[in-house]
Image (cartoon, rainbow, N blue to C red):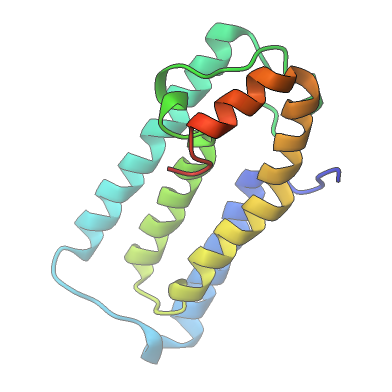
Length: 150
């Protein structure tokens, strides 16, 4: 399965849907003290794994392009990759949760799991297939030791 939609674009679409849900269905929103601050903290937490993972890929001189996993030249399994096989996608998930908190829409209870489902089915699983073809037993061992998300 070849991918056609970059994950940051998937995040953007989910964020737009979140905004639209909050705007068009204000009765399905919540607000609470510290909401914006909490959203900002979660947003910052989302940037951390993205940046750490990006630096790990750059250090190993392998592609960060999620649309071309076949171009991967190194299997990165150290650092943050000992905690999650997909810290960049985990970071995107935190960004979406932060956006959901900021807008306060209850429909995020559907949007966020939909985002996870979409990335898992159309991004992560095809990447895993490519990585298994490229790295064989080394990737299988890694996959058996480290969870997909967290």
